Length: 60
Image: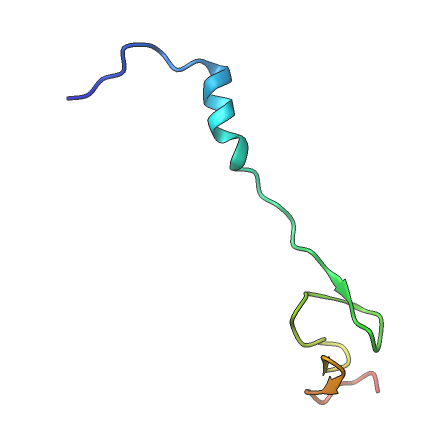
């Protein structure tokens, strides 16, 4: 059975975990209504995507 010879130090352990942090989702603004939306997705407030009306929205 493989057993480590030395104890892993706190610094080495934390360096290994440096990439485990969560990042927040980026938001873009809708070109039509100006509300925040996720990039490359339909705006849920106006129903616009890439300059075209895709969904029937409430705002317009």
